[in-house]
Length: 271
Image (cartoon, rainbow, N blue to C red; front, side, top):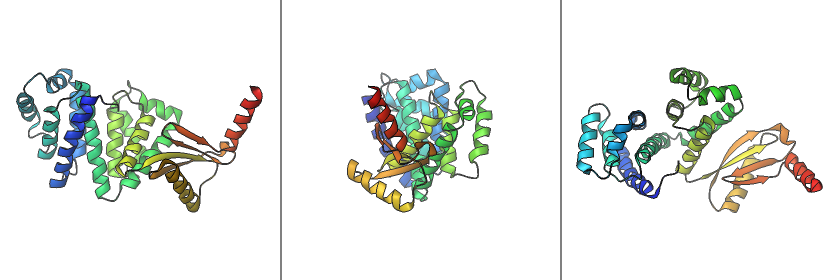
């Protein structure tokens, strides 16, 4: 999600309100409630335009949202939404994107407090790899014309009872309200957000064989030395590499696989 300058400033300000709210009360479902508001604003074009119209009096926007949502979502969620609608966003879409980001943050904070953030990050990453490896499943889940309830039932069959409740909530929102995203890249972005919450970058590591704990530790230490920051490893096995590994951190790719070296040699001789 790329926000324009005004929306980035608005999001930073409202995040403070979100964190204050999370500190002040037990609001376990705050993230899900914010996602519900995102769904409402995504469907109601006129409403989101009215709530993001910074030419109107902020007090009028606050009265509108309190009258509409009061009693329908919790007080904590309502306070966060009010803080969002009185802020100045670059566009109505920026307001909706911001509320979704706040919902994601609320859920990740919940997982963090429960000591489950590592598990959620890993589950999101692994689910993305599973779906990426099953073309038909990815097509069905990414089909904008497919029945929403059917897609949710399909994904629940894969993850319900096997993953953390926070993972389920994040995946439900991604698939139920894709808002132009495809499911695999959306899951990768969510896993990266979980890693960012732990102040770590993500290294996607594809190796020819399963890496031992000692090999993972050595790789993590080496990457931290290279990038001068903590690195979270997301591991995948692909025997087609024939040996070695490929590491991707952001846009940078370190290809130390046998297949990669052979391909480089072929390109050199073909030049």
